[in-house]
Image 1 (cartoon, helix red, strand yellow):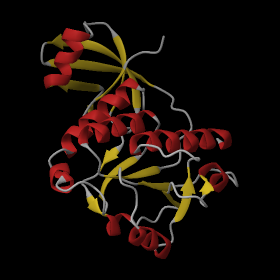
Image 2 (cartoon, rainbow, N blue to C red):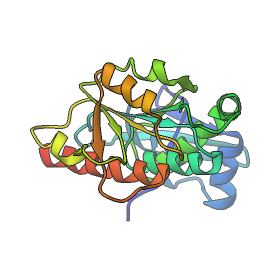
Image 3 (cartoon, rainbow, N blue to C red):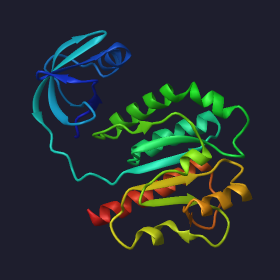
Length: 240
């Protein structure tokens, strides 16, 4: 059975600590005790570590050895148009489990009024969700969760592959766009519940982004996130 993995703010002289609510979760829910072995990450390296102190609001670890990490996946940035916040949070969680490197909330023309302002107050919550999902899925690094941006700023991304998803007929499948070789740094753009406007489609074309399809069915934004990242993850494994 795989050991539980947790993130710490820093490692110093062979020790690390978890404090506050995260420590209380370990002591009250997971029953962490002195002598137990876990894996910890400072978002750079992963170590096998032993609990040497377990208090209600403080867990202190002693590092034992570095844990070998598998091949690094190519960076994938998810630009996700702002949708209802409970759906957005679910998308952040699942995108993290599927290996996304960075999530950027984007204001689209058909995003609901008020979401852009409200999103600025939600970023820290989304970062906590990303961290918790990273621990659950035993990632070595947590994804970056950026502050919300306007659509034109999102389109300035310089990734090798820049792909936006459209439900209209004619776009190539995502797999066909990536099958020519190893998956390189990729940015994907997924729209709001109302879809993209004609003006936004023109803007994507003018900015050098490529349209892609996830099949003949119209997917919810959060479902499209899972479908797209699952394809990218599988393609990257094929070439590792």
